[in-house]
Structure formats: C-alpha cells, structure tokens
Amino acid sequence: MDILFTSMGVIAVLFVVLASGIWVFAGLAIVACFSLVVFAGMPIERVGLILSRILFRAGNSWELAAIPLFIWMGELIFRSDISNRLFKGLEPWTRIVPGGILHTNVVGCALFAAVSGSSSATTATIGKITTSELKQRGYDRQLSIGSLAGAGSLGLLIPPSIVMIVYGIQAEVSINKLFMAGILPGVLIALLYSGYLMIHATIKPHCAPKETQCDVTFARSFRYLLPIIGLITIVLGAIYSGIATPSEAAAVGVFATLILLAIERQLTKEVLVNSLISTLQSSTMVCSIMVSAAMLSTAMGYLHLPSELARWIAKEHFSPAMLLIALALFYVVLGLFLDGISITVMSLPITLPIIVQAGFDPLWFGVFLVIMVELGQITPPVGFNLFVLQGLTGEKIGDVAKASFPFFLLMCTAALIICLAPQIALWLPKLA
Image (tube, rainbow, N blue to C red; front, side):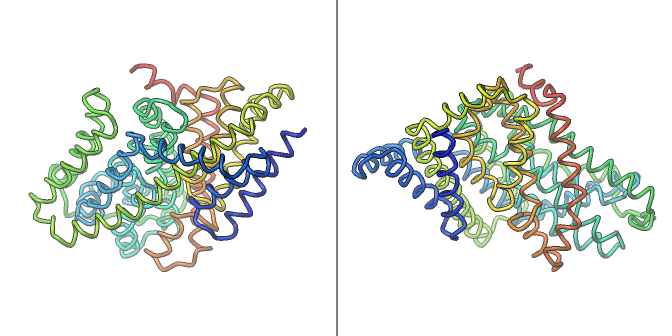
C-alpha cells in the first residue's frame, strides 16, 4: 500500500503544480526534484547532480531533430496558398457524395496531416479556407465546425506525427513502425467521420445543400492537389523506403517545401522569418517539456513507482479490458487540462511499464495513446482545436465544443474498434 500512497502523492503534487499556472516544463522539473527529496529522501546536492546528467542526455537525442523540422515544414505550408489549392482540388470529388464539400474538412485534414504532424496546424490551415467557404455556401455551421475540429486532430495520428516521435523516443519504440501503425487507424477515423457526414446529410438534406456547379474540372483538380501529394510522397517515401530516418526525411521535406515555395514565388523574407520565429517558439516548448519529462521519468525510476505499480496490478489480476478502460478514463481526464505532448511525457513513466506487464504491445499502445490524446484536443477547457476554431469562426467556445461532441463519440468508437481489433494498427508494421 505504501507504493499507492507514494503514487497518489506524486500525482497530487503534479496536479497542484500544473494547476498553479506554471509552465509545464518547469512544473515537471519541480515535481521531479520534490519527489526525489521528499519521497526518496535524497540530499538536494545529489538530486541536482542526477537531474543535470539527465538534462544533458535527454537534450542530445538525435531523434529530437525531427520535431523542429516537421514544425517548420507545417509553418511554411501554412503561410502559402497550398491549402487554397487543396480545397479547390478536392471540391469536384467531394461534391458528388452526400455531405458535399463538408468532406473537404476530413480529406483535407487527413492529407495535410501527412506533411504537418501537428493537430493545431492542421486545423488552422484547413480551417482558414473551409470555414468561410462552407458558411457562404449555406452548409450547416455546427456540422462544418464539428467536422473540422474532429478531423484536425488527425494531425496527431497520421504520420509524420510529432506526438508519435515523442512517444517513440520515450518508449524506445521504432518511430518508423509507429508511423506505419498510425496509418490505418487514421484512415479508419477519417472514414467514420465521412460516414457520419453522409448519413447526417441524407437524413437532413438542408444541412448540406446540393452543389449545382463547380469551376474546377476533375482533370484540373490534380494540378491543385499535386503540391501536397508531392510533399507527402517525398517525406513518407523517404521514411518507408528506408532511404532516410524520420529526422532526415523531415530535413528533406523542409528542403522540398522551400524549393516549392521558391518556384511558386511565395518564399518571401516575411514568410521565412515568421515561419522560423513560430518554429522556434513551438520547438522550444516541445523539447523543453520532453527534457523535463525525462527528469520526471528518472525520479519515478528512483522511487520504483512504475515497477511496483506494475507488480501491484499484476497481483490484483485486473483484466485487460478493465485496465484499458481505467487508462482511457485517466487520459480523458488529463486531456481536460493538458496538451498532448505534456500528457504523453508525463504519463508514460507510469503507464508504459503497466502496459508491458499486462502483455500489450508497446507499438499498439502508442496508437491507443495518440487517440486518447486526440480526444483531449476537442474537449474543453483546454482543447487546443477548440481554441483554434474559436479564433477562426468567432463562435463561443461552448458552441464549438457542442459541435465537436458527435466527433468525440466517433473517435471513442474508433478507440474501441482498435482495442477489439489491434491488428488494424499492427498489420502494416509487421509487413515491414
């Protein structure tokens, strides 16, 4: 029982520190120091020596290089007209199915996710075009906003995913295989979203007015889709062919994006400077959180919390289903207060040993965890996609959350399907 009281104490301190409004990376470092001093009884000098070594080791991980590069790639695309072309290219294909160009939210986000790796960047980039366009054409406002909020979260699951890179580094799982594992679940969620839009539009036709004409022909649509498809092919092709690691592929993707924008005469000094500033801000935030999380993970190891908790769960004979339900609820609660990267790095030192002890594949758990993190992107009060959409649409945050709720349930359905049929996530990695 001592280990349970220690665990509850650490978690309580963590929530208190983070609830105080302090920066997440500083909060994690404070909790790591506090845990070692108070719960492990270490002198402060030794704690400083241990954590300084962890700081140096965690900050020198080569895999971390992929994070700023993928962020920069997304920032460059965000500041170009590629998203405009993506909408035009998808319009003739989506207008022929029930729901019409509402499907551009889903398909557009899925495609952009394959070059961005960020949920908020995906939502903002696709949303800046589709929200105004759908409103002008008389599409149901709630359905438009909700589908964009849900589909925007695909930026975390469809590779290359920044959260998956973070998970792969922490869990010591192949990032290439993690990327492969995210493809089919991402497609599954996109199909569930599109299926819902089709059913909703069939039952309530006024929600998606029938498009009578389209200025873009099917043949011409390929020209508009070519830039995004080309970037996807370059990045993912380099990874899955074995030519490049994720970090090297990210560098190739950035180079290809710069060349593309230069050819299109969109690579201005303003675009370059602003994209670098935003990349620096986002990358610093992500990498500092990861380094602090490594400190917390080390503290958990000195307290023997992961191994003891795993041993306790094994002793209690929790069924796999009960364990997954408990973890799902745990992650949904965390998603109410924290962003995806913080959730991942904060929880893994405790949950990963438990999952391994219970016999689950860490590769599969990575996909399950990302879906849980995606749920947090569309749940208030700290749903980042909700805030992005609030800024884009001017709607109240409560109305945006309400519009997103059906897609929250669809994502829960996808998580259940992945649990019942884990091969959906594991099939492609096993072929590699």
